[in-house]
Amino acid sequence: MADESISINEAARISGVSAATLKRWAETNVIPVRGERWTSAAAAQARVVARMIDRGHSLEELRRAVRDGRLAFGYVEDLFPGREHEVSPEEAADRTGLEPELIERVMTLLGTPTALEGVLSEQDARAIEDMAAVLDAGLPLVALLQLVRVYAQSIRKIAEAEVRLFHLFVHEPLIREGVDALEMAAQMEGLARELLPLTSPLMEYIHRRYLRFYIEQDVVGHMEVDFAGAQRQMGRVQMAFCFVDLTGFTRYTEEEGDEEALDLIERFVETVEATLPIEATIVKTIGDEAMIVSPDPVTLTEWAVGFLALFAERPQPRVGVHWGHAVYRDGDYFGTEVNLTHRVVARALGGEVMVTTSVVDAIGNSPHLEFEPIGRAELKGFPQPVELFVATARPPDE
Amino acid sequence: MGEAAVVRGEAGEVEAGIRPEDFRAALERALAEADRDERIGPRLRATRMRLRFEFPDCGMVLNVAAESDSELRWAFSDEADWRPQLELRMDSAVANRYLQGRESLAIAIARGRARCLGSSRVALLCLPAARLICEPYRRVIEQSFPELVVPSA
Image (cartoon, rainbow over all chains, first blue to last red):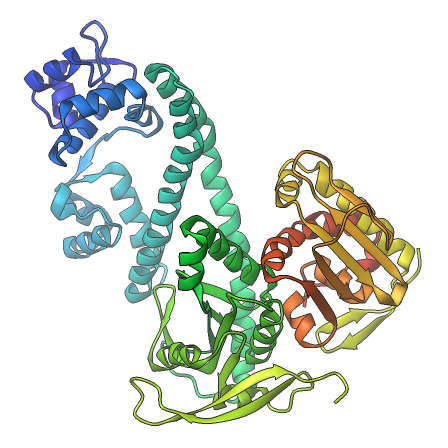
């Protein structure tokens, strides 16, 4: 526990700071030590102080930060188990039957290279055992490595969001209220202790919901490919790719300011999510742009046309849609046809849905859409001109 | 409660013969539940949206107003004490599917089955907020109006 007494030498080992320096920091109240009673929370704070000094901050600045509660960090020591038994990569290799190089590779993917840390924790070793069991069960190594990378990237984002939101909505209000530093640490520890056990079941619940949904999508997709007699290409998927962005967003930001622009982007992405057909997915958002994929080019194009009808004035979105193949890797789609879709949206004007011939062919004769050919366009990076069409809603009287 | 016939439509199964009184009662209870819900209520009120739904097939109008410091207000009337910012017009069958998350509003617009009138900024605020009503609506119809439930495709 963070509150239990430890020796100053133990505190020095945990923090990576000499005992003499620790004493000096304690005397100037940069780390919370009362009556020469050292704790792992104080050692954790010393570790952060050392990092801040390395980054060029003065001791006086840090002392003020501690006084204001801005450096309250030691509370996390109580929430996570300390490093128990240490395991070498070789020992982990013996336990799992995996090569030490593979273990090193996996740990690098997780963002905790053993090259930097030298050893694994018991938790790391247990995770490696789980991965070995996954391989034993028959999942190919190439798929496992991609899954590990996707897990690491996604969960890193989740952890970052949790910490940032906790800081913005819990820590900062306490600082503004002028709460005493130790009381602040206690309050944050109490709240974090209640919240932390809730996160894993919540994530597991959301994970299972999406897993079920995508398994169903996968089954439907396979059946449709079989019905259509389409040729399978290993590692490649056939999808409708779509990019949507906001034209005039830079000008909007200049006129309305960063906060308003950020707000607009958030609501824009929320509205995309709220209106997308169930089988379509946002792959990623980059600034004012979202990439969407769907196994169904018809509903995705209809969505695009209907979505743009919601925006009568600037900044107006524009959309590019293409139906083609791409390599699916690490939760993203790659390849020439994805790049082509990106070039297509760049040719659209605000309020326009621009599509390629493959979309028009895949949709065929639609009772709801019509396509106006705009001719063959030179697209950067593509040697041959590409035929483009503007998709619109078919007037109801036709 | 009346029986709802099911006909094959372009978006899958579209329910026909929705009884306006059932639909209205389901909406009323869903709004009340949304307002009471500790998670949904505050989020809805924070949007301060003023939304008008028009269901021409059953001659029904629903005005909803969310305010940050009071309960959600709604009126099944063309006349309300507030001016709507956004108007959504669709038949009750489309609305019933939309409120269960079974119909994309954008696709309904593209297919000429729904209309949305209002400024882009308001649409960006109201449309994600309107989706908050889906969860309580689904809950209410599963409990009390099973004939309104649209099975997943």
